[in-house]
Length: 236
Image 1 (cartoon, rainbow, N blue to C red):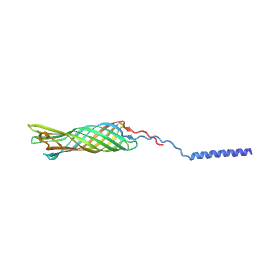
Image 2 (image 1 turned 30 degrees about the vertical axis):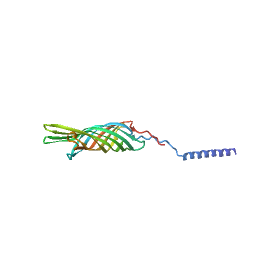
Image 3 (image 1 turned 180 degrees about the vertical axis):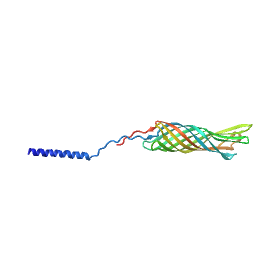
Image 4 (image 1 turned 90 degrees about the horizontal axis):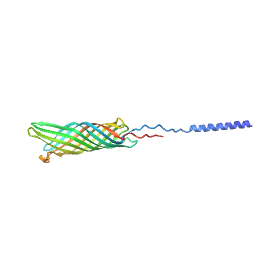
């Protein structure tokens, strides 16, 4: 009887261990997933430089009615700030820029010359963009100004100049690429529309107005402060 009781006890113990092991095998095993590689984040201040080409019209009103084609090259700089929420592809920002160059035209007829020159211009704009990672597509718009000069001359007499700062608005779009965590490159189009200002008012009075409207294409480089890869997030 003792042998039989020992055999029954051993069998019961083996059955208990087998059932417990089967129960453990039926339970799912949870493991922490590997750390997710961070996406590029566009948040932060930036500073940069740009260069490009502009063309458009100088519209005349008053004593002269019509328009002159203007064009030329320019260069300048920009400063701005972007904000992008973690995990969101939407980027919101603001940018201010200033450009210097010569977007103008000149003609000379029967010893009388006419020259126009947009010597500088700039914008203050908001930006809204979509950036799933290192490519940012954006639209932009805001206020703009153009410093324009008109010069009239006559052979043997001399010349006289008049300049004004024109205020207006601008809209455009662009694409920006994060080459490195701190360095980005962009291609951008902006249209600048300004109001008319009187020229040679001290001589002619308020009877001769001009306003420049300009299309610009530019290439730019930016250095970002605090931008780059977003925080590392682990998923479980």
